Length: 142
Image (cartoon, rainbow, N blue to C red; front, side, top):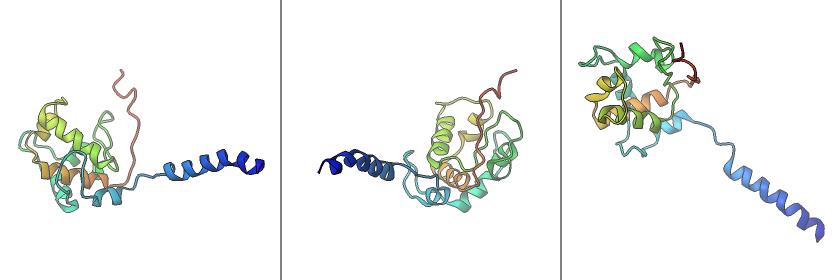
């Protein structure tokens, strides 16, 4: 009986690790998910790819012009790699740029005319790309 009681905490810890740990980022599953914490409609992968290659009337740029193919080859070292980023993060960021809650000289203009559907589509598209995220700490230091 005592031996059984001694192993109980270890067993409980193991169960907790199995239940809570080991979750991996799955861009394909995330891209096909219908709900969004950003309150957006379900995104469309093909619509997102088209939107990523559409020049903005405000800037004359596409998403790909600055963030590169698949969102992973930025034109400038200070621009983030967005390919493989979490769909909801991308959606929230684009909404914040569009709504004026987040400021950036180019991105605020780029996102200003986006509809909720376009944001959802772009978020799904870039979330489905290969993940090559990087840490930008110090990128803006001179």
